[in-house]
Image (cartoon, rainbow, N blue to C red; front, side, top):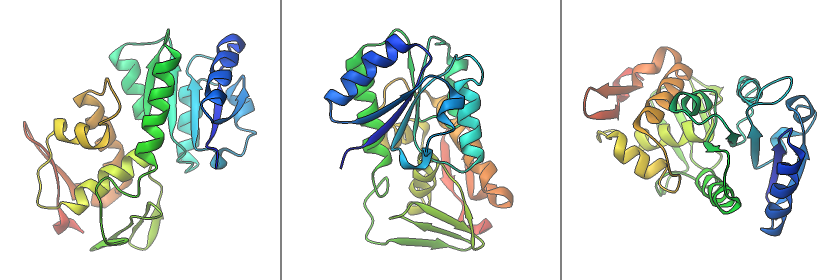
Length: 229
């Protein structure tokens, strides 16, 4: 079954080049030229969004933020000429899974797409013989990647789910930022320790009153705290 990608970029020349090469790699590609057009598409049916940041009308950041608020968790890779660390962290903070700076090579884009699809397509970050993991008020379905908190489903991006699953499956382990990057982003280059922190902040916010289920130790990293659940 072909994996479907939605390409959102107002530069038609770039879109045509990317679309041709992605189709040559076996992907099914739909191209639109604005965030507004993208919103008319069945976004939940795509395996990945390739999203330009700077567009007329709604920006790529705004579109990503909107999708996450609507609990649409399809992976997002940003394409942008803005390449500072703060720009990258903004992309991750609104729910992006990767960030590619222009100009880029087609080979790099394809490699990064395959890395994100491979990472987000895994059942869990580490093999588990259990499909359901329940810790107090928290239940993780490692097959469907769904999370229930006090019986209510909470919407996590795939990266957020992988982080939570990593911690919950190893509650007695203190994970350094370097180790988290090696496990969660092992095939994605240019990930910094601050990127880890941004994702942890977003994940803890979604855990609400149970945010302390993920604790930090200054200078060491993060671990799971089952006692609060």
